[in-house]
Length: 546
Ligand code: AMP
Image (cartoon, rainbow, N blue to C red; front, side):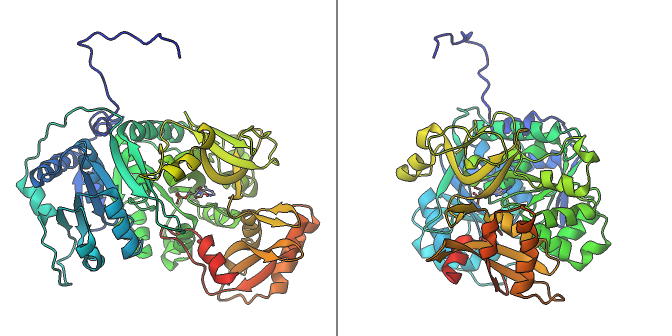
């Protein structure tokens, strides 16, 4: 490195990239804009700022100080949004607990993160009761409450959230500190072994906000997130900060709608009544919403929807487009804060047929600003951008977790060779669009040839009788592995293995997929196991069906 560091006048202000600047120096200052919680509560950005100060005062009075960890167990709420700001703005670390983990795993994450205080929604008290005697570090509990508590509890609370806020001052002078301080931590939803902790600094979250906002805000044809939008998350706030979107929404000064626990009726009602125009979710949720009877009578044509967390099938994409939804893919992982790519379509592509557009919207996407994403072979050399050469996605970006909390070995593996290894296998085309074909752990090798489980799932999902499908590799003496499709059939549409084979043969005969897929075996199942964030749980499926 050169020694050409810029000189600094001693009195010059050393601006740190801190989360408070997202709140206080936004793109649009909108004091009268609304924040809505379900159908029960609404207030303005002016009050949001005051409540963040009140929360900071309340937490300080409880004894929270810089460097402490404050954990939250809640569904998506205005309270959570307040914690997204107040906790890190105090210099403390916000631990967003995945409430869908098992009680033992939750206990593990609380101990491992060394949580000092825990803000808990009354709904989760039964979980807490099971583990509370074994928590080593928690000094105090705060109750978050929508309804009066009905289940008996032995937990002594420091106070109830609204009461604590009401007693506290609405001003707070948030100090400056080093932008590299840890702001948040949470645990991967890994299905083998105990979850692993990742962590992000103020600087990383601010840069993620700016990078993602510029990618979304500069799309010319579709999928633009701008100040006139109404935002509602449908990926949980406990999982990768709801993809960091609440920070972007706040910086844009848009109306924000928080739906609490995800109940399909209520989600659709909020989309309709609050005129939600921008959301994000995993494919399973979109599938569930489109199947819901209420979805048929609601106008969804103003809704922009990012699908991520798992690949979106063309069938699902076309169905959503058919309802007028501007649907497209986003990609990332817990370790990457998370956003790495978006599959926006260009204005010229909007002239294409829905089928042709869907092929682009379902790709994994193009990297967003500041993300150096490469598809590489085993020696980290970049693969040609020919849409055929397969390799692992590795990345460098300013907002990647620098390791796993207290897990040196796994951190070294994650960052082998100075690149963050995603474990995702992909191809890239000449325009830079990446398409994930599998997880490294999920690839199926039939007679020495790679078969993409995602591609196969996409083809099978195209059959009108298929409601859901997951493909895993089945060990086979002759072929090494054979693909096994687990299929949930639509109630009104009986199906046989032959129907599926016939359907697939059309694709193999026309050379659209690897001919090895004819070795596919099919098993009809009642349901497909999902992870705690609603993705197909292939580890569990392999355990169950192999
Ligand atoms: P998680 O850390 O639980 O958010 O999971 C991250 C993983 O989900 C990634 O490494 C991918 O395997 C998968 N994933 C996320 N987004 C996509 C996408 N758009 N298409 C395919 N897989 C995805």
